[in-house]
Amino acid sequence: MPKVIILGSSNAIPSTDHENTHMVVVGQERTVLVDCVSNPILRLEKAGLDFNNLTDLIVTHFHPDHVSGLPLLLMDMWLMGRRKPINIYGLHHTLDRIENLMGFYGWADWPDFFPVAFYRLPAQEMTTVIDSADFRIFSSPVRHFLPTIGLRFEFNHTKKVMAYSCDTEPCAQVIRLADGADVLIHEAAGPVRGHSSAAQAGEIASQAEAGKLYLIHYPTGRYAGGDLVAEAKQRYQGEVALAHDFMELDFN
Image (tube, rainbow, N blue to C red; front, side, top):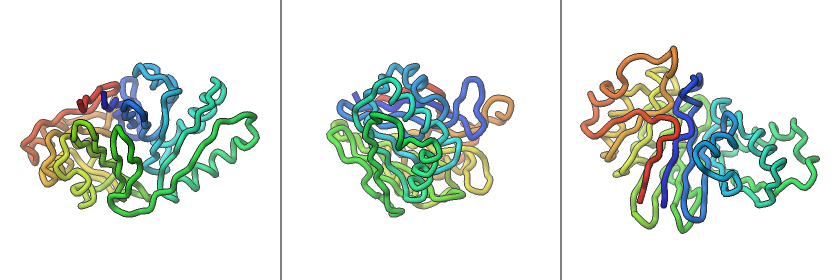
């Protein structure tokens, strides 16, 4: 049952076939959205998921290409009759700004709004985010423009592991998050401050001894260029592929 669906794979500038990077992790008891952009209800429906089954949202950092869809998600779920609570996790820096953002929309005055619980995560390596029958999720601070977390997912029934770098320069925290992981999803926006190139992603995967590398958050559409897979393979001997929208990763 456990699977990960990539809902978007582009960097900050989306294209027709590539939405901004975000994903959903599906288990028997929990469905966890990682970042929230575009029109989340439509992305979930296109992935074959019922928005009412969403139990948790992890927000990695407060940049528009990772958080812009959150007000619309909360409003649409409320308008469509949601009554079940939802949990939202993130660093203090992130959740403080989300609460301020929702305050501008006056959400405290929306009648019969469903419960929202905020869980502020410390900026410490291997912080437990969720510990459920389906999976355990851990966060570690990574190296971006503002406070940001990467994630490690340990699927309890199959003992498989996935790591996600989020937006980051190459850093030891991601190597430790991805240590021995079956799958590493690593950004490849380019060799610029706050980000990583495909070659650097390959180097991280190699050092972590990850089983497979998926590149994500890469330039798409008219900004795409170069063979990112070949670039990553210069540093990493395992299997490399580009993540793409609505790709499913099975962790059975």
